[in-house]
Every structure is written in C-alpha cells, then in structure tokens.
Length: 260
Image 1 (cartoon, helix red, strand yellow):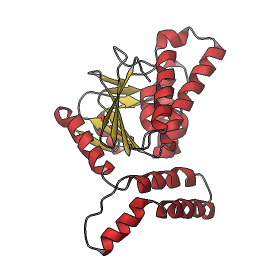
Image 2: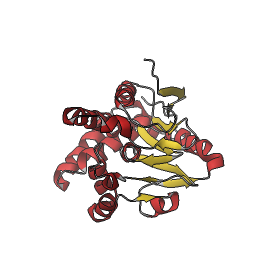
Image 3: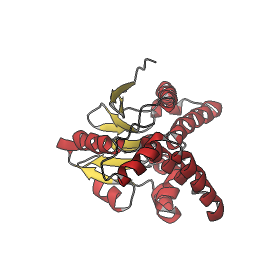
C-alpha cells in the first residue's frame, strides 16, 4: 500500500517506519487513517522482528494534533478522531514484533501517546520536548495518554504530568521513566538501528510471545497471569527457534535463529 505521510523500509528483520507530514507531523484525520492502515499492514508481516518508528523531519517526532483542524470538529467528529487514534495506537502493543519509538524531535500530545504505545522509547539528546500538554489547552488527552502513562510510571506521577500539562526535556524524561534511553543527536539513528538489528537477530518468536505474555497478563490477577505465561511458553516450544536454541546450548554453539 502506498502512503502519503509514511515510508516503510525493510532492513533484514527490522522494519523502519518514517513519518513525514511537514512541517511537524501534526496529526489530522488523514494522517491518523494512514497510521491505522500502516500499523494494520505491519501486523500481517511474517518476517519482521523489530519495528522502528521515527520521523523524517528535522525537529519533530509528532508535535501534536493539527489544532486548526481539531478546533473545527464537532463532537461527533472529535469522538471519531479520538477513536481512530486510539485504535491505531492500540495495534502496536499487540504486534508480535518489538516496537521502538525513535524520538528524534518534539513528541507532544498525540506524539507522546504514540511513543507510550511502543515497547521502547529512545530519545535524542538536545532541545526536543516530550509530554502531554493538553490540560493547558483546556482539553483531555484522547489517544490513550491518560491510561498508558499511568501504567508506565504510576498514577501519582502521571496525574501530576497530566493535570499540569507538563513537558520534559530528554534528561528529565529519562529520569522519570518516560523514555528508556538517550543517544547523541549525531549518532542517534545509527545507534537505534544497531540496537534494533541486534534485537532482531534473536529468537523473534520468543520475543513476540514474551511481549504478549507481559501485556496480556499485566491486568490480570497473578494466578491468571501465570496461566497466560504458561500458554505462551508452550506455544513457543513448538517453534523452530526454541528447538534450535535448546539444541545450540546443548552443543555449545551459537544458535541460528530464523524467526520460525
């Protein structure tokens, strides 16, 4: 499928998605629809282990919603827009691949919410900011921010950020657990891709089952969550990679994982 605002590039078992809606990747209805369609397409890919989502623009990952378009929406249109973004972003946690947000510019509002839906959040050092400033505009985050932020850093810290519409530079975002790792701007994408490539060289099926176990089990009582872990552990034992990993360990050699 061809996209106006998204470029897909496969590099072995790593898929790079570059966002480019000038000048700041502001989210409008058309962009949201493309994100939903692109993520749905990725969900069907069999040979991808790691997905990297980044921006092709110089200063913005996603700087937030297209406020002009958003201000012109009636209530029904606003509800549909919020639901579309929620549904698009909710595809990412259920992907069988590991998803990395490579935040190389401002990630505000819907941009922060996209990053929150990813498994890793890597950010460039520098002057970019990340956060959920909606309260300062008199509105409520509508693409999962109130829910995913609280699950990531805890309800007390999340409430302080949400109620005050706080935004953070890279170092503070790292300190509070909003992002996982910082890289220098000059080497940012090369280091992100190096990390992604190393991760993708592992047992892709096991990575997918581990991710599914965490996300599916985290909201369940512990005994039910243990059942989820057993279910995915047994499913994984049926894969070629699991057999190869155990055989390679017994033979004292490096395993040859093929994502099968």
